[in-house]
Amino acid sequence: MKANCWLSLLLLGFLKTILATELTFELPDSSKECFYEEIKKNTTATLEYQVVTGGQYDVDVELEDPRGSVMYKKVKMQFDSHTFVSAMTGIYKVCFSNEFSTFSHKIVYMDFQVGEEQPLPGIGDHVTVLTQLESSAQEIHKALNTIIDYQTHHRLREAQGRKRAEDLNERVLWWSIMEAIAILFIAFSQVFILKNFFTDKKPTSSYTTLKT
Image (tube, rainbow, N blue to C red):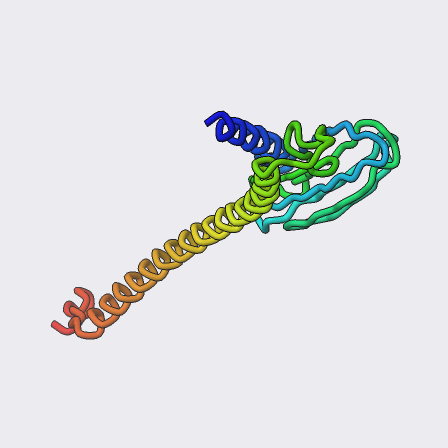
C-alpha cells in the first residue's frame, strides 16, 4: 500500500512539473505579448507554439537573448518549434505580436521547455541498482511524458478544427440567408413584372375629353 502511494505521489509531481511549462493565452488585435525565462549557460531549451484560433492562424514571433540579440524571428507563422543551447546565463525573452492585424483576436499555445527531462524524485540519488518498483516508475514516467505530448497536440488540433468548422458553419449560414433574400427579391420582382403585363391600362381623362 505504501509503495503504491509513493508511486502515485511521484507521478503527480511529474504531471505538475510538465503542465507548468505550457501556456495558452489570448492575443488581442494590434497587440504584443512577451514572456521571460531565466536560463543558465549551456542549457538546452525548446520553444514550441501554435495559433489555435483567430484570423489566418498566424502570428509574429521573436526570441531574444539577455543582450537583446535576436536569436529567432518568424513572421506570420501558424506553428513552429525552435531548439537552442543558451550561450550565457540570463533572462531570455520571447514575444508574440499580432500588431499586423486590426480586428482578429487570437488564442496562442506556447510551450517553453528548459533543460533536460528531470528524473523522478529520488531516482537520481540512487547509488545502487533500482528496484523493480523504481524501474517501473521510471518507465511510466517516460510513457506519461509521451502521452502528455500526444494529448496536448491532439487537443490543439481538435480545438483548431472545431474553430474552423464553426467559422465555416457561420459563413454557410450567412450565405444561405443572402441566397434566400435574393430568391425572394427575384420572385417578387417577377410577380410584379408579370402583373403589369396582364393589367389593363385605363385611358387618361384628357384623352377621353378630346374624344367626346
